[in-house]
Length: 366
Image (tube, rainbow, N blue to C red):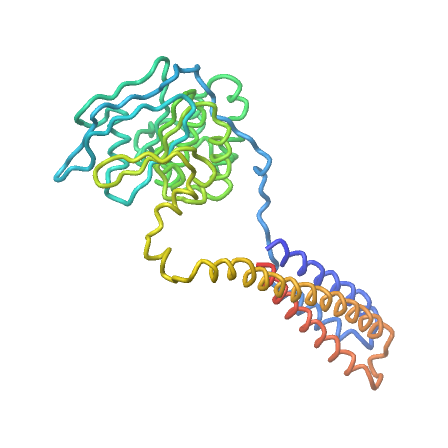
């Protein structure tokens, strides 16, 4: 969009210059009017100003816990059928864990077990000085409907982060007079964002997050991810947002076959590990042939694309130069001149060619 806006701004500037040149000349007034009408019909590309791009928010750490923050022994949960059983694991201080698995395997139930919100088999213990910050999928329902947005976060914020309260509220799309709205009048999505903002301001050393990116726009997701990357404590997160999870965790918990498997790697490695074997082997080729494809075909394609890209950029530069020359000729040519119509046709042809080249350039860059 930035590239398209830059090109559009350039074209608009060129058109405005032509209008200024022609509007004062009676012989070219009609052409100037046609350009003005064309400019008026142009749909301007607008790019939202991201005022939070440089903002850095950190989760406040309450106190340092002991070497381990959570211990589970023989934990199990069943409803009409068993979800998981015999889960025994300890979580060390500073671990960053993503809890993954298909819908219905018990991810949210495991988080509720850890929070002691539902009955379960086995034992769950917290380590020394552990302070939990919990975000549930229905967290929005726990907010006091009689408090304002600002009062909701003001109630939990402590320390230096209080100085960032208004900025943080703005990050989650609450700004101006909105912060004085009662929670009771907010939509479900607004409440969810407010609940997450409230948790960001609450001191903790162990975060448990169940689908925290639901209802968040891209800037808000980036703020949250950056805060988690820099979080000094431990967190356990459930999310289907692969882009959000990428590069965020150093452990994967995988609920599979009613058990909990632990993988000591990041999301990308986990996805490769979990990729179905039939997909991996869908095209079976000798090793030598596979290496040849990896070392020759792909680079050859890259070189071809790079060659086309350079040629297109050269053509764009040449076309822009031609357009400038024709504009100068039009400015110096009388409206009644014999070659005036041909100059206008040439100008239109060149601008159309430039548009086509820009579309081709964008596709090659993508």
